[in-house]
Length: 119
Image (cartoon, rainbow, N blue to C red):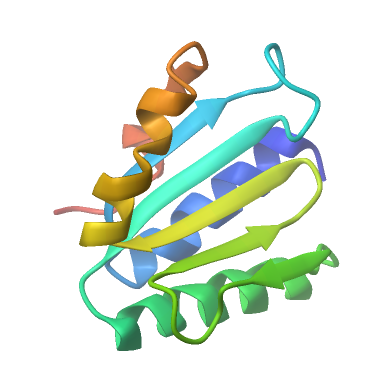
């Protein structure tokens, strides 16, 4: 799968579990860390876990399991690293604190509206 296809699958998996404010940043032109960051908010620790498990399941079924996972249990921030795509799942308070969209403000924001289901 291409990095774009991985990012799209991540967005669809997050949307299916009602993630809030999903953002995709194209970081490939400004860092070698990843081509895309996908960032979203969960409303609870339970939802944070469900989002992580769904992304893991969907990408693993597509032969793209995460290379690593961090912060899974208690931090309010879970990171799933797929190599070309890094997924950041936050509780609202943690997302505001780390403000990755500002930190990576030079990255191109990708329009994902065509990937999202009806609101």
